[in-house]
Image 1 (cartoon, rainbow, N blue to C red):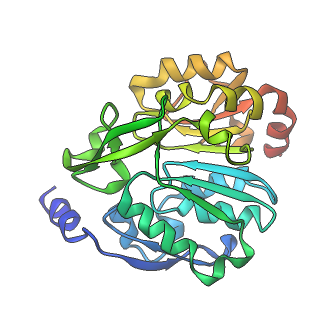
Image 2: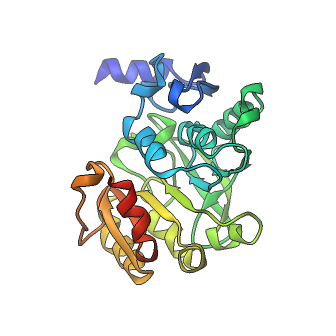
Image 3: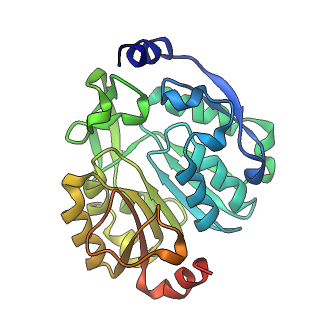
Amino acid sequence: MMLRTIAERLSRNLVFKRRLPDEFGGGRIFVSPDASLRYWRLNLARVDTLLLKMVDELVKPGEVVWDIGANLGLFTFAAANRAGPSGKIIALEPDPWLAGLLNRSCGLSERRMDAPVTLVQKAASDRAGTAIFHIAGRGRASNHLESGGSTQAGGSRGIESVATITLDLLLESVAAPSVLKIDVEGFEHQVLRGARSVLTKAQPVIWCEVNSANQESVTEILHAHDYELFAANVEPAQRKPLGKASWDTLAWPRKNAHRFAASQT
């Protein structure tokens, strides 16, 4: 633990360029081990295998993808490559430092054949306004709003006042999502409470990290909007409906059940 703490402190504010795996275009993005020590690795395919697996499974050419809690943009830019120039990516990231790296990655020349990425430097919530945002004592991947957070945060090294927006309000200004990824460190139930029009009208496929304390409320919201829940980390052919949201919930609208069946073959 002592060595990990030292590594985390030495990682702060370091920035590297890394290439996405070839199957996601091989384009470069800016990363930092200040977000997660896994970004010391040269091979981004080993940083988060489930995340890239979800891009591979869910994102098709021409689709609109919302990445809520974009962090450094591994999902964002892999999805942009898969969606292609006819798609659109909306990335929400409230941390000013991480948003700055995302913006730099957006400006790299190899983005030309990818879907355009629109960066929104706000936190998703159940209301628009401002909120206290904690910069995690450990990796910035565990940053969180005041009432969120997880044991991975390791306390708070500082706070920011950030703008908040509901996904329903976002829907008024950008294209509706066909794929919605949510990773907001224990605040997912609040994000979904602010997304009732998105869930009703757009009914995107959702991949959502769910804190154990929020399983009941997330399940209630998604079931109320006619979603079937599955565990994302189970191979598609082996998935069975869940009675309650899991930490890696994959939610499919029942009206798109045919698409889910196709993904299992």
